[in-house]
Image 1 (tube, rainbow, N blue to C red):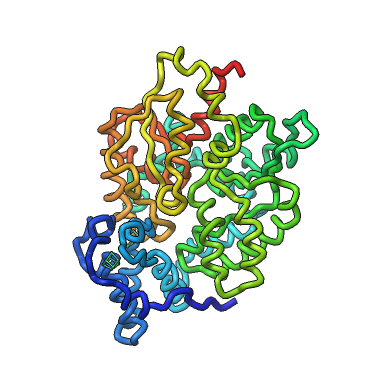
Image 2: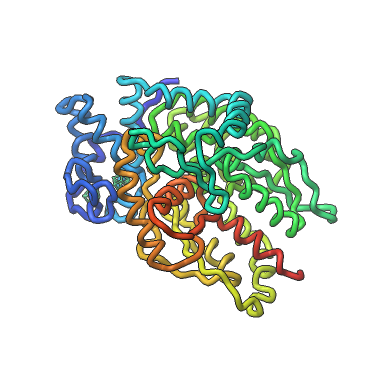
Length: 435
Ligand code: SF4
Ligand code: SF4
């Protein structure tokens, strides 16, 4: 399905008043100090591209691929110009013109084919100890061979779990004893499914404690975020429509779809709508699903007694762990969720706020993690230092992309800081509670 742009580059370019407020919050500009790699510069270049004054060549491709899509610029722009969305649009043109690197094609193929991905993850689990050295405590692994590749050298990566989350549990879990129970479906996300499986397990523990019935939709596919940020809109089209068609089969029977991942929840709640803007019948079908979809901590905070339970006896637990909370871009800036995880954590953990908690961690997507990995490590270095300065034992964020990036960034120095999703920390705190 050919995609038509949601936003016109000339209009956006004309609406930019050149105030420069966006530059001070832009991570890529903070590294390069190059106007062309700033929100204002991207907008200017895209205006020139629309007017046929700029060719989409290797140089401009490189520039447009250097944006982290963090949305910091949108937040401060007096006209709320959607720099992130127009960069996503031009990446579609880039993909059409230049194609995709082989590893991206392979990765997106696996995301479209769950059964084959399951097999590859299983294979990865069996053989991973040959190629990587696993640190279970820090939940990361390093390559054993010190290959002269910047993208691998000293890098900490997630490792596969023995069985994926979706293959570890029944499809329906009855926790209620009432006649009209609350029932939620869990959308787990690919990293939570294959690598960070404790997040899903913890969410099930919390839902059990709250007597909420659970559905684990087994046929769920990737939300499409990695492909969307890379311009592979054919893959996005396939994943979004497969998911919508499948979710329609149960959406009327559940109260909510809850997602313990900032990026996946933002993709479903917001980016599906952006993507489907020129396919109104699909957009209408998506709406029924997206209005029932929530990032997990927000739904739990707004709709359950979890906060009350977590408060119980919290003052007698004198030996609280210190944690610091990183605000994922897709959580705070895109969904305005930052208070809820802190509220659910603060009674059982001492939260020490880091400097610039909502500054991007530097993950940035598949291209940033591969061909632009140098930028990712620079931004990640600042985030890691801000975390270490708090002297916290644990850093938390409701996002597995942040988990991967922050664990990698912390892995570049000697420290004992561990990353945990707030859902895991909440489940651990619940063990102590009597009600
Ligand atoms: S989305 Fe982030 S990296 Fe991209 S231009 Fe805006 S502030 Fe800069
Ligand atoms: S903040 Fe908005 S209006 Fe100001 S320069 Fe940046 S994009 Fe343009």
